[in-house]
Length: 134
Ligand SMILES: [Zn+2]
Image (cartoon, rainbow, N blue to C red; front, side):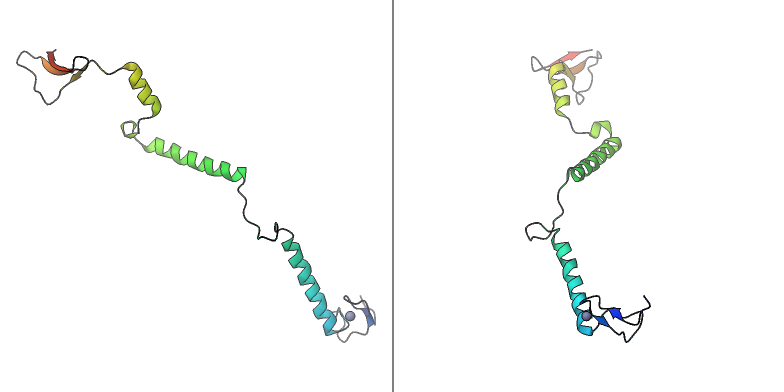
């Protein structure tokens, strides 16, 4: 643009620039007005992203839920990997398996020492009595 006269970028009026190559407007008021208009347009652009005039909130997305679930899963997996078998809590499956298999008929009573004949004290879970057997 190397003309003697310029066209104002705001009002379109032809004018003689005081500063060639850098001046875009005929006057300060046009320069300021153009800036205001630009700002307003930008504001409008950002406002259009808002829903019902409310600031845009971060929506909960299924992708986000998936990521959170994957994170929880990873933590559970890590916990499982680093928890010893005997320290793991009993699951419903464990309890159901125990119920299905039933209680053992005899339970060794450890704080009663073996008899001289080698018999040991057991608790009979069906009769609910203490018995001695090998
Ligand atoms: Zn102007």
